[in-house]
Structures are given as C-alpha cells and as structure tokens.
Image 1 (cartoon, rainbow, N blue to C red):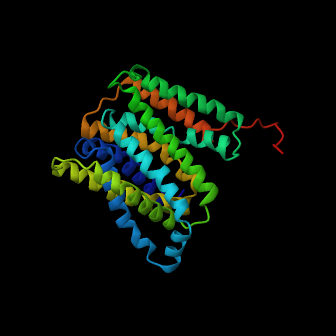
Image 2: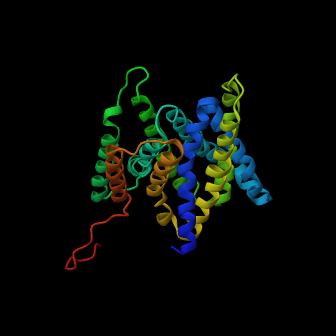
Image 3: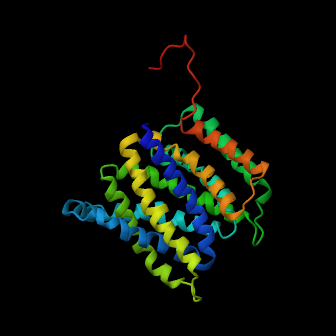
Length: 297
C-alpha cells in the first residue's frame, strides 16, 4: 500500500469512527429512523452527481431491484440498528461489537454462498465471539431496559453487513463502484422516506443534533464511501479490509476525547481478543508454513 493510500485508510477509519460519535449525539433528538433518513437522504443528494451519465443511469435502472435490496441490507437496516444501539451503548463499545462484521461475512458466505471456510478461520471465529463475550458479559441483561437487547441490535447490524457483502460480491460485482455507492444510497433514501417522516419528532431538533446529523451524512457517509471505493480500486479489497481493525480504535479514542467515555480494562481486553480473532478469521494473521512442508496442491 502506498503512503497516500495509507493516509486515506487512516482518514477513512477516522471518519467511520466518528460516525458512532455523531450518532450518539444526534439520535436522542432525532430518533434512530429519522436520523438515518437524514444520513442517507443527504448522502444520496451528494452522491447522485456521480451518476450524471446516460450509461450510469441505465445501469441503475437495469439493476434497480438488486440496488434496492443492497440499500436495505447494507444501509437501512444496519444503520438504523446501530443508531438504536447508540441510544444506550457508548460509541466505542458499539464500534467494537460492530468489528465482528467479517465474522458474519465468513459464516454467511459458507452457509448461503458456497464460500469455503478454512480450518484456521474456525479458530478466529471462536476467538472473536469470545472477545465479544468478554466485552459485554456483565451487560447481557435482557430484562426490560437492559443493555442485552441493544447489544443484539449491533450484532443484527453486523449480520446485515455480512449478508450485504456476500450478496454484492455474488450478484452486483459487475457494476462500477459509483453505481453501487450512489445507487444503493438513493434506494436507501427512498425506503426510509415514509417511515422517517412518520417517526419524525414532534419537538424541534436542536442545532447540535442537526450539526452531528449532517456531519454523519457528509463526512461519515458521502466522504467515507468515496474514500472506501477509491481505496478498493487503488489498494485492493484485502488491504482496504484492514479498516475493520482501525475503526474501533478510532471510535474509542474519539469517544474518550469528545464524550469522556471510559477505557476500562475489560473493554481493552475484549477489544484485543475480538480483533485478533477477526484478523485470524479474515486471513490477515496466518500461521507460517514450515520450511520443509510441501506446497498445498
């Protein structure tokens, strides 16, 4: 990865880490669904200029069903679940559980898309889930108002991301990245329009909440999408996937600096175990082959 790509990767992780801060501040006034309507509506308006070509518009129309499904499972459902979770959970804590996305990507790929899982990946999957348990063991309270339901909401979001990743790879890989980004964002805004307006808060929304909602749309959605797809084009998908490990660190630091969230030993231990397990499961940490071992066929 070139120095320029490395800087873009760090910027991307910072913008996605900040998304948890923006949601944590804005969602109490907006509510989860109206906030995500703002996120995807403004994001779509900023991304649609990328489609101002007859060829790209034709591709969107020809693949409208697939883009609609991608928008639902990659934006509408997971973003709304994460926004719901941040009404109760700290930004850094939420981002750490969200880091299990590659785990669900691997599991759903094996179960539904015939993607094989290597033996080493099973160790990584088990270790990552154990890390989530260490992180959240004392908060798995499923009584009314307990944190357990909000933790399940984050895991539901990562399940959606895993499904969307496999679906996009299997059925939409032929589309240009700008069609995927702008097309799915526009479809997401359409899906959110009626429920977002129906649930729009009766009380006026304050300036700080609006500032965070618009920053979520402009920086952590539009800007992040452009950086992400640009990195895939220049550095490759594997290198870009390392952002998974940088986002929680970024969110924890932003949460500590901007919101005064605590960084306890349990959080740090859970983070370390989860990220090591995810690194093993995604192949970023691999056992070195013995020098005298024959190459695999």
